[in-house]
Amino acid sequence: MFESLQVLVLEAEEKKKSLAEIVIETETVASNLSMEDVRLEMKKRLQIMKESTQQGLERPVKSVSGISGGSAFTFWRWLEDGNKPVSGSILSRAMARALSVNEVNAGMGCIVATPTAGSAGILPATLLTLQESHHFSDDEIIDALFVASGIGMVVVNRANVSGAMGGCQAETGSAAAMAAGASVALLGGTPRQSAHAVGITLKNMLGLVCDPVAGLVEVPCVKRNAAGVAQCFVAIDLALAGVESIIPPDEVIDAMANIGKVMDKNLKETGMGGLAATPTGKRLAAKVWQDSK
Amino acid sequence: MRKVKEISAFDIIGPIMIGPSSSHTAGAVFLGKVARAVLGQMPTKVEINLHGSFAKTAKGHGTDKALIAGLLNLSAHDERIKSSFDLAKEEGLDYQFNSVDLGDVHPNSVQFLLWGEDKEAQVVGASVGGGAIKVNRVQGRKVNFNGDHATLLIFGRNQSGTTNDVTGAFVENKINIAYLRVERLRRQKEVVMVFETDEPIPLRGIKAIRALPWVEWVCQIDKIER
Image (cartoon, rainbow over all chains, first blue to last red; front, top):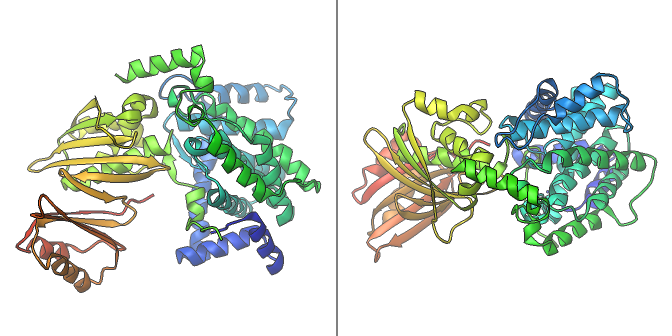
């Protein structure tokens, strides 16, 4: 659909429309559905996002393998006990929700892949926390989700969103970039500022490898979703202030693709390098494989 | 100019799925559903042979539960996937998992050997990423389809005019063909046809195809609902 952020931004500027309007129009044409139906389809996804950002806060959710779980609950309880997080109240609550989604995912609960299951926490945690702090309506959040999907389409067209092809930068990097661009639009930034939020986020996450222990979507994936939210927050504020990425956002996406190509295959979702190859990583993997027999 | 991929907003924000992995969980459900469709009835016994990464991390990813859930026709976002083993017991499905080497195939491959009340089926397929699947073998014959369309499989004796015979049934029922593959196997004695269509062909169309003298086996598989 969209080959570059530049094209997407230019179209919005020329037609004097929001990014959300451009993406929704394109979707209605491609799918032959009405605007109401397309929005309704996104609303279904928003509902699942609301549940998955909440479940892990209410009770400790354990993963199926037993390796991980419960960190969203622990962190949320610490926040609710009145502790003052140095990251501030909005970011810390978003981090908790990102942890929740990925723990629900590892516990075989229901999530929306945004763009993948392993990176599913970043976008809903960011948008739903902004909804809470800034009192946005569901319709405004749905618009933001379409902006995120438009950004994701550009990433898929120029690079990829697969850990096996591009490492973690392609999964949590893309998710954080989508969340940043969508949030800037939600918070009243221009289409150009959204694009620069994408560029800034992805720049700061280039090179991140995919090194999951035992090949499972748990360690380090769950906490990388909390970190992805933080990266996204850095870019949102910079972009809204008018700070721009000196490397144009589309070129940053291309750099991500190129880094993915030269990244060693041990560091692309094979569970063979990085954290997976540490003594503890190997011990946990041996236990999982033993249990599988 | 670079080629622009045709993707939907809901490919990026979606699918709605049970975790933890689109390839190891959602894709596994879809493979199970295809196997069930090939059998054409409720399976009473299944042997599931896991290959590669599927064999190694089946339990941690819940791939085993997802495959059984697919055989029970659950959707990829059904919360009962987690308890599909209990559900299988309730519905009288006897299952067994083995680790095998299926040779030079995709690392996320699985072979199903299925038995129903009066039918048997064999299906080999792979989960190739993001919830997408490829079905490689059905009843021992090489095929190639992905479930993105309604799929009609026809196996029979090779003779002239077989393709014409079948497309006639499609025209009569006003069904658009998206893709069509025809292969001659075993020294040209056998024909394997894979039709991928926009809409499923109605039952009377299938009956007409089944009645063709050269046709030995027909099966329709619904489009995968993502």
